[in-house]
Image 1 (spheres, rainbow, N blue to C red):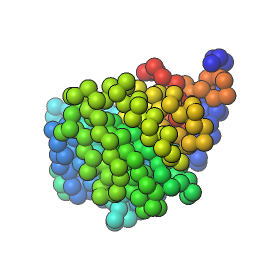
Image 2: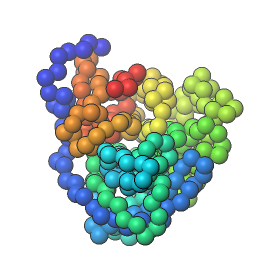
Image 3: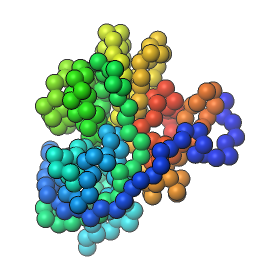
Image 4: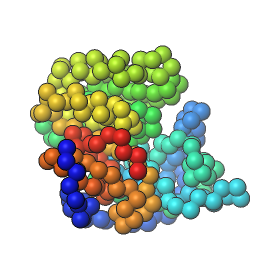
Amino acid sequence: MNCTDIDDPHAARAAAPLRVASHRCRVTAHQAVNARYRYLRLQAEADLASATRPGQFYQLRCPQTSALQPFLLRPMSVYGTGPEAGTVEFLYAVAGTGTQALATLAEGQSMEIVGPLGQGFTLDAAARRVLLVARGVGLATMAPLVRQAAQAGVALDVLLSARSPADAMADELLRAAPATVHAVFDSDGSSAVDRVEPLLAELLAAGCDAVYTCGSERLALLLRRLLQPHPQIRAEVALEQRMACGMGVCLSCVRPFEQEGRVALQRVCREGPVFPLREMVGGWHG
């Protein structure tokens, strides 16, 4: 892989026209899922359900409290939409200042979101079986794709990686969609790469039309390597990246990708967050 000079970091992969808006939303549900994750459902006046694709995200303006004053909006993958036209759902881990402040919102309160943003997943109409690999909060990103595939009659194989069984949240990912689930955990060592590799290799060899992943760089890079003998399989990765504006202006989320033997810089918020998995470059934590 040769790193060439790149004058325009946006030129390597064209982004679709940006059609976003700011939406004032009412909190209709907000509750703990387990010790680490919370579920948030918002209702807007606009038809967010038809405007949002699996894999896209919104920027959330987290509330300010006496103890917490988050400044930047927080990017958050869409967990679900509908059935009402204005309903959008999020599943998030409480971690830093922004999500701690977000966790204080009560039902009936209002908040602002901006979106939908970014490029989503591509599910071919001819697909009959797909493999999903998700870890941690990455499962929230995958949930709308699970729903889309299930509605299209696509068979689902799912590898779910988590710290422990308490964090797996298979029911939250599938939401009653039929699937064959393989769960691996840090707590018993089954999530280690050398333990996961033969399982993934077997699933790929059994045949699938596409692979989608989110939530773990090590699993994404393992998939990239295992996919080398399977050039016919579509492979996409949804990336998690710190960002500021979310609309491609500030360039804070630029990271490198390998394209045709050269390194191309892409904005995760605009050209992504979903990218071809085979273009992913590991070890980047900009």
